[in-house]
Amino acid sequence: MTDIPPELRDRYGLDRSPTRKIGYLLVALAVLIAVIIGASQVIGRDPAIQLINTGHKAISDSEVRITYTVHGRAGLELECSATAVNDNFAEIGAKTWTWTMERDSVSEVLMLQTSERAASGSIEYCDIAR
Image 1: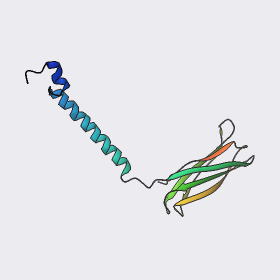
Image 2: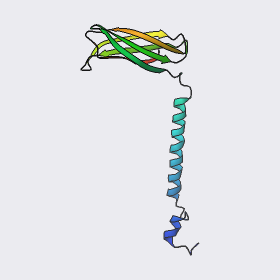
Image 3: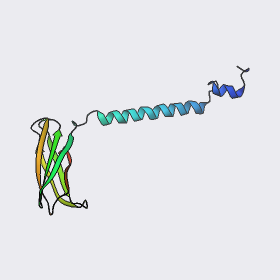
Image 4: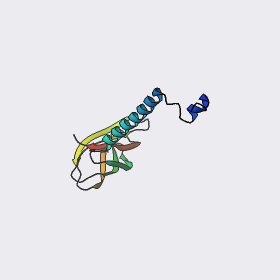
């Protein structure tokens, strides 16, 4: 192996320095830790809840109708929150409530009271009640 010039030894992997081996080991360890963390986020999680805001309509100067669909699992107790905003995006109505899903997919209508005419209204979240 002495007939290979030093600049080519590194190029073809013939220069096996201990620091390079430690570097490869650290990279492999970091990848393994990332895989374990990613798997722990997926394994054992609660069933996924999917919230879809399907529409809103100002019914009057003091009420907005919000329609939404929640996909999950029948029997789950959920905590949900809704807000309504005016043209300047200031909150003019809010509500938080807890309910139990009767089916795996539920479409609902919420009539939310507001302090003035709403420009928009939406369900902010629906999550498993703790």
